[in-house]
Image (cartoon, rainbow, N blue to C red; front, side, top):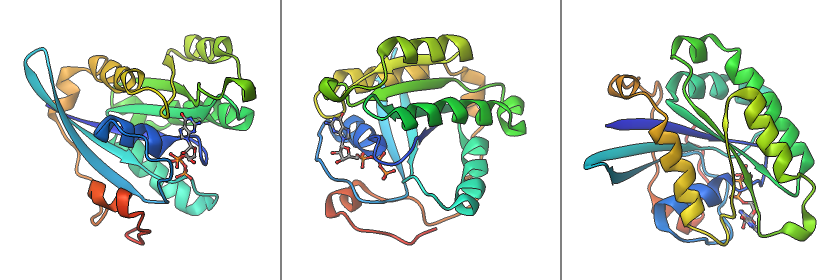
Length: 201
Ligand SMILES: Nc1nc2c(ncn2[C@@H]2O[C@H](COP(=O)(O)OP(=O)(O)OP(=O)(O)O)[C@@H](O)[C@H]2O)c(=O)[nH]1
């Protein structure tokens, strides 16, 4: 079974840190601006599940963002929307993102893929500006799921985010994979460790 997961959120909230943590169990600190789709397989209830995880750097360029955004929504079987608990603006942005995703045609026609809201950087509790309750309430009001994690400190909670999302995907949905629509985006993990910039898009 294959599942496409898109990781979204504003700059520096830890999108790459979460993705790399899942894939390698490691936190390497700096990640570079790499637009990437990673594949990750695991066993759940005796079946092999392959996750294709699209992690992209946040861009202020709205024309780039808009066309990429549409591609992501078309492609996704599930969403991980990340904010930092120390960054109120990133939380507000996740809230807007949920509305935007939910109002797109592709989201509705795809039978409403599950959305997980992730408050990251839980280890930085002294700098917290977004309460856990606010994240939980946002999830409740928007019919999403909520986790607070630290990509820096904890592998297990990051694993729960992705596995929890997969368990909410409908099996039927996952059998019909949509083509990516453009090439040159698949990168290997070595690109992350080499911290290479790419101009593949
Ligand atoms: N303390 C702490 N720092 C974190 C955590 N997750 C990520 N960081 C740091 O936050 C910074 C940004 O992390 P990235 O993973 O590059 O963030 P991103 O959302 O992919 O950023 P863009 O690619 O710019 O959109 C890096 O310096 C990370 O080391 C965390 O859980 N705790």
